[in-house]
Length: 324
Image (cartoon, rainbow, N blue to C red; front, side):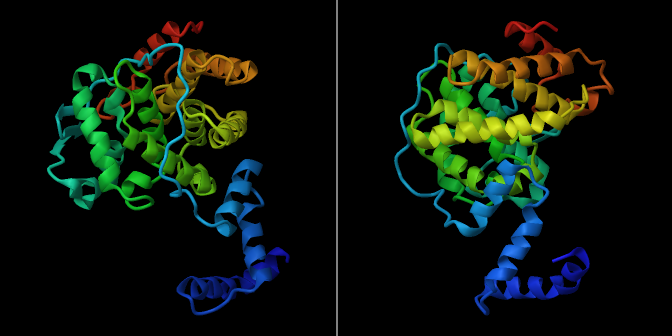
């Protein structure tokens, strides 16, 4: 079907698909595959395959009740300097606004705004300054999140917060202490399955580097065949993303990308041999190059968000042994 013909028949395909979703009609096989073709033809292979699986495979990301065993790292997680966003057991400050999560409805309280809620669901305080002194708060918060946020529903399952939360929960499990509770590990598996089956949508709505990082963190943290598949997918997605990626120093997106790569370098150090040396070297070189680039803007505009500063990231890179 060429472009002109597609433009002519597209309204009827859209109508039929809406009727199908409502249970009123059966969409022809040809129309289904035609629509899928136009959705995936320009996507990178790893995202195109994920989109096809999501369209035709049953949703099994919530299946199973037991989390796989976790791998033992050779050390504890080393976090960059990051100001705490928790001012009390259930009180948070983001974007210069302090609020209290008085009950479970707060996780979905729309008047607080999507951006503020996305930071709430990301759990950045798990690895912020002084996190060890707030460990009981964090354990309680993780347990509450798993009970209050049903799979696939609400801001907590959006591309803005889910990939970052996956990595932060794994980091929490890698810090000194009791590690991630069993309920948190089970929830983490469900979250990664959800992310994996929606890889096409997440890759467009969030940074592909952050999405790949979440898959790699889970794929290294857990043992088993499913975790190995997450790791392979994460490597392929990150390799594709870095071919065209660039980071603008001092921009929020740039800082996030640099932090993601440095985190992956540290992950490789904690689990020697699990991530290919050639990939790790490329992450080190890319992060060092981005850190060495002259800043394009002042950082003051991002002081109210839980993202490490460029200075903190440079110190983090140096602690990991990067030449900057």
